[in-house]
Image 1 (cartoon, one colour):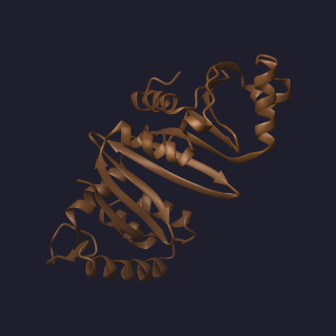
Image 2: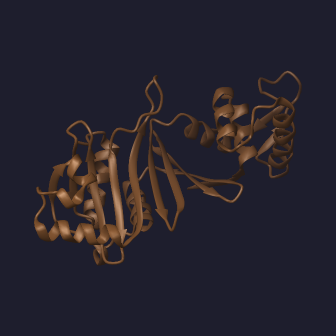
Length: 252
């Protein structure tokens, strides 16, 4: 059964504090324009504490309990936030349309994954069993992957030619012309990437770029070590293959 939580920025931040993730809390607040001024942070997190207790997502504990601030998170919310804070890896879906960026992230840990999606003033978190079909359905809707807009051609060419498509001599003329036309008539562009978390910090070496025009959706696999780009089928099966490669860590 899926578990869903709607949290404000401050409630999310308080959750990190109660987990002992002080460094992550600082970065989180700064990313949302909240400077680390103790009085300001205390005031905003105090309001978040009241909100969480009112919604039975946290409770006051007796003095001496091993928690910060006299609060204990609901067990399900605590587990969800732990999996967001320390996933094995994350899958990031990002899309820009009409200068508006939208992003959803799946944090994967063991047999569970947590969907994190921004909403006004905060985030929606949904904890669910890991399922490739769910990922595919979410990505297909997010990136408009369907037979109606699919490109079925395969091609591989140097990254330099991808950056200057008019000079992409490794592509058939007709395919290059379609790419040039669709780039000029772009409806959205996006990316599907895997984020890993080694000790040195988050890294994202592999992923796909997605372009959408009125007629077609294009899916490009980035091969940074080879400095090449692979045009992949942008139908549902092609999307599933790209997701499988990212999930299994065998992207090449």
